[in-house]
Amino acid sequence: MTTRNQALAFGFLCAVSILFWWHSLIITLGLALANDAYTHILLILPLGAALIYLDSKELHIDPQPAPRGGAALLALALLIGCYAKWRMGAATDAATNDVRLSLSMFALVTWWIASVVFCFGLRAFRSLLFPLCFLFLIVPVPDVVLNVIVESLQYGSAWMAALLFRVIGEPVQRDGILLSLANLDLEVAKECSSIRSSCLLVVTAIVLAHLFLRSWWRKALLIAAAIPLSAAKNGLRIVTIGELGTRVDPGFLNGKFHHDGGIVFFGIAVVAVGALLWMLRKTELRMPLPRSS
Image (cartoon, rainbow, N blue to C red):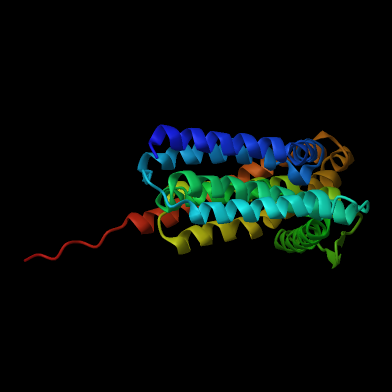
């Protein structure tokens, strides 16, 4: 199979996937536009395409790929997609619909990966392993899992805020997600969990780790650090608004800075990720001095 024919076959398989999974794609797009918890999905396809372009410079295409592995993956993706579309399609409860959408989008990304293996071979798949797996981030997390994540962010943010209040000498009592100051009670509600900026921070860390780090443990460390940083930046936001509301102007408690100031603290968290990246990259680039003969 020539490279041109391989590209045509790949384009055909992608077109088939768009037609078959069109409904799931539209629902996922609507979810990303309407729900803060899924906003990051809007970035995954353009970022994935950019990463594929960058990694394609070292792409190794097998001119005669063995299609058996790709065909098996295509069959698996189609089987999962059909199960989600028709077997689970009769269900009407919200929980099943969430799982069905997640399963359907998982099958779609699996189909795309299988198309690469089928058309270009395993060597091409290995060359594009990260950006292809990165595409799984378009799979919406079911509500049952999302609720656990949001609750964890609520408790983590409340714990971090209580710690910061004590650091600055502000007496505070914490009861779960409720913070009690001398003359103010603050509750870290679901809307205050900063799930959107937390997801964006993790995605940012994943991309930066892939682009600038080589060793797997440094990549894992940078990505893992984004999780506590998500709670830390939200805790800092709570403390800042609480202090401004009690010491400067009560309007800060429900004003514009409360609702739209998250970008400031997201920027602080990105700077922290960048600083950690700089330290990890510096240790990675440090080479031992050659021994004199």
